[in-house]
Length: 329
Image (tube, rainbow, N blue to C red; front, side, top):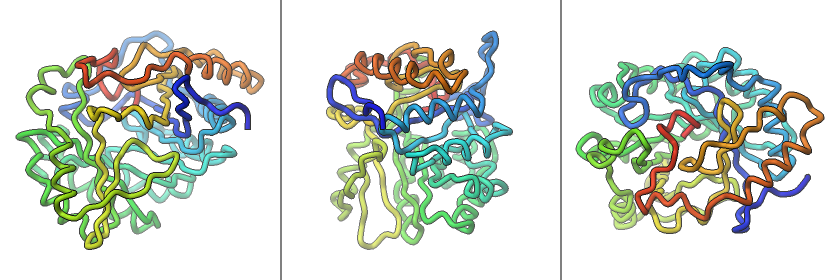
């Protein structure tokens, strides 16, 4: 292994979130309420499979062991299975995850598993088909639910389900979600609504603090689960009476950034040190040849020394990220 990627606050980075497209076919109210709109960039091709392989290899050689493939909706890439295979075959990578809206899972999840995908996160913001449609703009609830069932059929022992809880929309569904995971090996991850540049008024209207959910879980006998080094930001809770687990992602919590262990690369090949950070650092010029890996590693490590101690969301700073689909959430 080369140097371990580490910033000036001694945080080590075991986890890469790699976006492979910013295109999505859903119109979720908190992310792309008006649907996907091409940016109009010139030469705006997404990272190729060889470029993906090179960037993942550089991260793996510096201590990264987990890669999450994100979008937009990553399965919209026709070469998605090739991307999974390229990541999974990289020495040092032992977890290959994806985040998906789930609409293609039923038909394709067996192929994803065969290609080397080890973990799946599915976005599912409601167990009510009508509310699902209201939030996503798509009448695909039954497709997503069938896809989750299919994932278990093809051999996944656990599926993670991401839920953005929003006040006066789906926040009243907590009891239904808890009932749903009682006998299912699902890790239900409640994600606190995050404020981005284009979503100020939406945030003000629908934000619900994760602390209220945390207090309710603890009062009802849920206990914290021990974290692994390459785990994401969720605080995970387990209960003796439940087969499923609960994860809470609360970015407004005071010490949220202290355990940061992840970096992001956009579908256009830019390094982002934080979801709510900066314009990004160009890596693509160093992804054209296998011989450029040393220069690539040096550029990433140099930029890491500029990573801030916090995202400063708790101070009302929304950063420069226009919406979550732009760099993979």
